[in-house]
Amino acid sequence: AGGGRYDGIGDDFGNARAATGFSADLKKLVACGALERVTNGAGWVLVPWCDDEGLRDLMGQLRGQGYRLVNELPGAPSDSRCDRRLVKRGEAWTLEAIETEKR
Image (tube, rainbow, N blue to C red; front, side, top):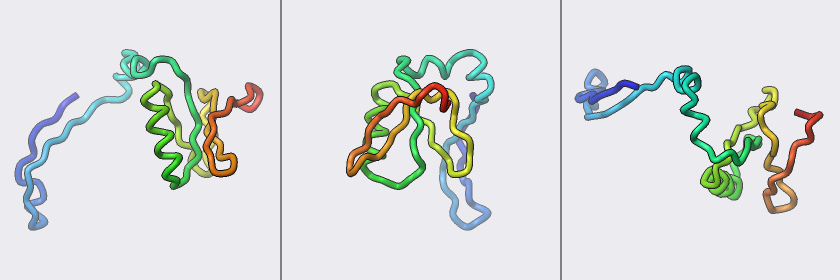
């Protein structure tokens, strides 16, 4: 990772401000296994792409429990690592298993 202070950023646009920033090489983090240690092994969850406050709240709870959440983008193939998905049944979101043959 690298980074630093960027004082006066935006000065060219008439809005100079102090800022900090950093960068990290995601490929190196994946290669060394750093991202694998982020979770407690709770599993991967496919999350529909929508703006729902109840869904956002549930996503926060699941992240706190160690689940990895993957947004299902419209028109994109589903992530094959996901073994569960969030589904809205009536007014409530539920965590359901994804059948193996559908993954």
